[in-house]
Length: 250
Ligand code: G
Ligand code: G
Ligand code: MN
Ligand code: NA
Image 1 (cartoon, rainbow, N blue to C red):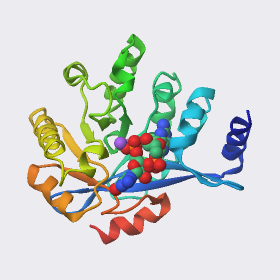
Image 2: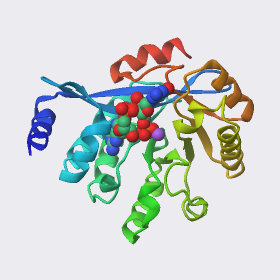
Image 3: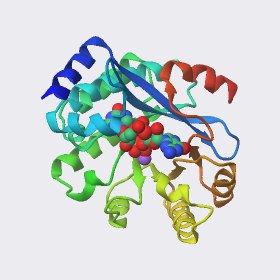
Image 4: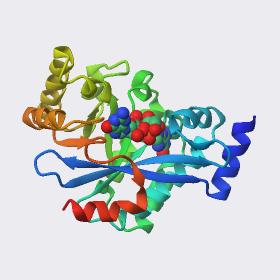
């Protein structure tokens, strides 16, 4: 179809761009991580959100080429940041079962002289819904490689706490739907407080997404949330602009 052909061209012609959004430590505001977010600058349609084209690319299989490109670009950008700053890369389920994932990651890490622990892979619970041996093997291989694994959009999928026991994650990212009404909805506040406690007791990092207000930041910090992400800190920006942002916030 048309989008599929245009996506193919986009990769070839460089109209896909990589944006990124910083995560800061709640305790001191320092940048600890940067999430890579792909964008598509379409000649006629303008900027197309990944929320629109990633599901299509997942269907056509183009997510594999796009994903490899994101991994290469993100690791290259990270090689110019301080060692204390990790890079987070979103992985869709199809990427996860792709045999090329490991070699692509290894190569990008090696060529950019990154310590593997600076690379964080964001996966969603949908990946774990139907855990195949392949998924388990890949999770194990990634752990051996030494990259970190974060559970993205935590609380919105078919959350099962048994995942937390079965797999070793490094971080939970509390979905922004719980943060949006944190100040006004006691149930959201209770859920957020409980997830932060859960993460801390399991020795996992915990990040809050979609933080837009100082009141949300303060409450999350008081609850012991380790990392904060959202428009309050910064909107996503071209990944090359992160160097300057990191320097301002060191
Ligand atoms: O950047 P934005 O909030 O518009 O992203 C929308 C969705 O697209 C999010 O769920 C995000 O995880 C996903 N996304 C952004 N970049 C990538 C990417 O490089 N790979 C994958 N698989 N998903 C991405
Ligand atoms: O699913 P994932 O968590 O990867 O999605 C990240 C998406 O959330 C990105 O598209 C990004 O643009 C968006 N985002 C990041 N911070 C905020 C925020 O503070 N408010 C809103 N509304 N969206 C945000
Ligand atoms: Mn994410
Ligand atoms: Na998310």
